Length: 140
Image (cartoon, rainbow, N blue to C red; front, side, top):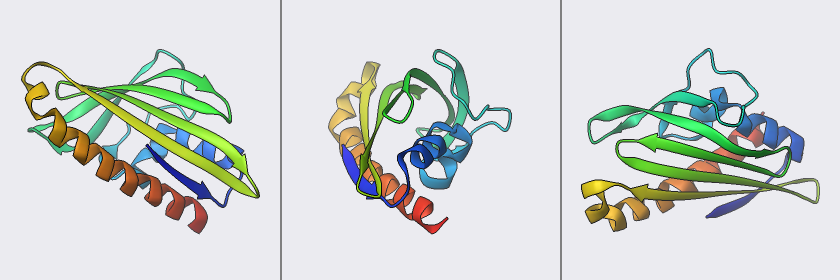
């Protein structure tokens, strides 16, 4: 779990992060969200996403399972035999927003053998990406 305070309003941070088309601007493991992806996520609608290659694959999906405007977003992802739960939390703090992203990965099949390595990589990249989100939003 990673938390930063971003010098932008909660509504700005929420609007930016729930638009999957913005994901490649700050999450360095997401290469592309399809151009036809709508800005507003619909609960239960699966979105195809291109990720940085991992184990020879780059295509996966993200599906919104919970959207609480200005407070919480929960996404479920499927990618190379991994099931992801990604939770974004938003809280107004002073003149900015406390943003938290928690990423849980559940490997399937033989990938369970390397779960500790995957978990370590997820923690490292989550920190990098949350700090990158702060940089991107505060620069605009």
